[in-house]
Length: 242
View 1 (cartoon, rainbow, N blue to C red):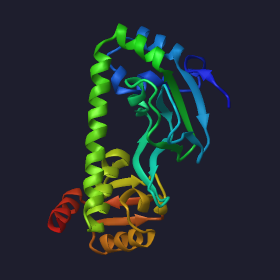
View 2 (view 1 turned 45 degrees about the vertical axis):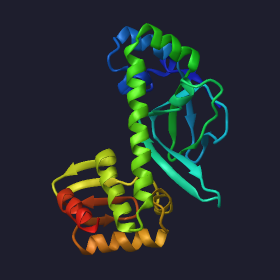
View 3 (view 1 turned 30 degrees about the horizontal axis):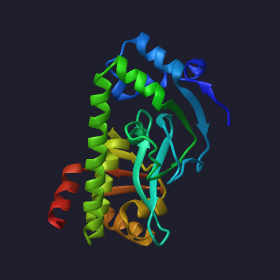
């Protein structure tokens, strides 16, 4: 696997990895350049594993380009997707605070992806020189915990429509583009993976998508895009289903 420093490939990317990450937003250009020189730049192909559950790691993974799914497997071997991450997001931060911790999830590239890596030693140095980054990392951990709690709550409900609408609203915020006729959502995962994310069958996803389209809440555009005409109407429908 080819490895470079982020600084060495700066001419290929619009901006270095650290510049894309909110926790580094308070740093000067000089400090960002310094971090870029510490960072390893690694390409992954679609479907390739970045890290496996149970593996030992002392690395922060920053998504420079592309998308990654974070997954766990149930006792009966079924995949449960925990997060869908895109450029500027990161994972592996827990291992920066707990020595000898192993990864409690697996991560896979869901499209051709470029990852920038910082080791625990480098992050420790960065946090010593910029203490506010520690607070931002803890804030990110807290938000990740809230997401996990919300996911667990959604999966606990027996109503698949509630789970699916929560996912559509999440994707509107994260992957949506505002258009004249609503919000165009480029689905980051396929129907099977969507089913894994919300804990239902693929057939249920197709059936509920068709129902929402019949109700005028969404418009399907192939398998990879939907248009949400009215988020408020979708939220109202969600509240009526609760």
